[in-house]
Image (cartoon, rainbow, N blue to C red; front, side, top):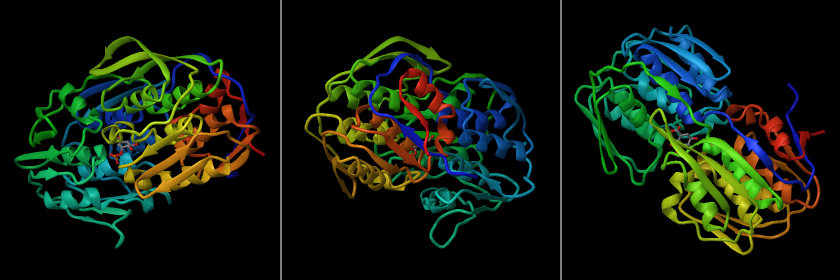
Length: 436
Ligand code: S3P
């Protein structure tokens, strides 16, 4: 397969109306919980990206009848909490950390063994953060000696509830343990050091599963049931973020982003950009099946550098590649600290972003847990996305302010979270096409 590259001519502005694809986190959970529910869960707005499709394929391989996706519509014929069947072989989850970490918890409570594999990036990511607490619950999971995939999850383990204080603020770890908790004797409680996305808790509650939440702690007890529901998935704020940044940095931009998920555990990027001086107006705030959504109008603004408040880090954890581009186009210095987690995402997002920004002539200094960026003019360069979808899309937007063409290599994984990115961005005004 030939390598996917983007080439973006400099300049231009973003305008018109855009609806970005469905939320990735909610799409994963709609398949997982829909499969475990009693009855048929109908999903609209499902993200037809490789990550959520990997989750869908995994549940099909475990005997769940799933219709679609067709134009974002999926019907999941739930098999109940005890209805999954042993798959014929390993479940390959591609690039998707969410699939692997959440499935590790869910599969720890089954009566059959499973093996979870992934691509090179996923096979290098830390899994002990889920396997260790799951083993405290009584699970048996083998990893490589480095604590990475493939994961071999042994069936027929008796799980019991634990009280777990997470050392890192991770929605994937929290969700993994809560899913294992559905199969555990007694109560499983997970406390988080800072608020993280709560889509699992919302969907469990929406499906009628008893769940208690107080402050930083969420608890479930085993032995309940899930009822099928209708799920209307909003547009992914993490995908909208590239357009929020692009329109903010490109003079003359005026863009409307429709039906964007506005869950308060996800809106850190809006907060950060507004602190930098961005002009983002929120309108038509409403509820879509238990998740808040709104339309966002974003216009060009002169941005200025800021100290990014530490409490916003988990609320914008996937948006830092885009935020770094905003910082590069801002006046003055932006400092990010407390974000060491960025080093273990789909790539080391601190190093890879710093390398690319430097190639574009920006003063970007990586630190162990963040970055220092001095805003300034952007040149023309070829940058390597290291197969990281969000890095590729962030640098694509940087071209709006570059002095010459920007070429981005290793972009195939953009389709893990944002199928159709090139077409949508081009329709909005980005001068993007395939690279040579
Ligand atoms: C996700 C949680 C986050 C995020 C990832 C999706 C989820 O990971 O980076 O893209 O759906 O739960 P962490 O929980 O590891 O921060």
